[in-house]
Image 1 (cartoon, helix red, strand yellow):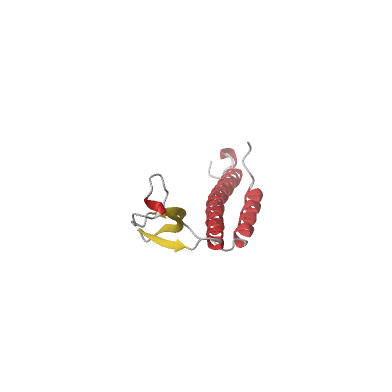
Image 2 (spheres, helix red, strand yellow):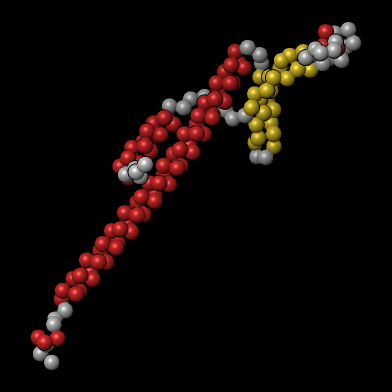
Length: 141
């Protein structure tokens, strides 16, 4: 597969920025259903094979190296939270793609700068060579 041109990379970066600008509500974390047993001997949760009460939904994620848990109420809030987490995953993917494209843009610009410097150096060497006089034409020979 041929390497994309600088113009193609710049177009890709613009498209990624547009997609990032469209991102709405998002949040990191994992949403986990939890079931618990209340401990009452006559409750349905005390029977063998019972999952227990629930689910109650816990959203967990790390903040400054510490795991933080937030209880999400059942119903609409669970669906909203799932959507927000999915949006966060999409945001993270777009961000990584943007970083990759930017690195390739930087590399392409470096290559152009290097190629331009080499071309300038060659032109300078050619001009110096063409200015030299042949040894036979020197008035000091």
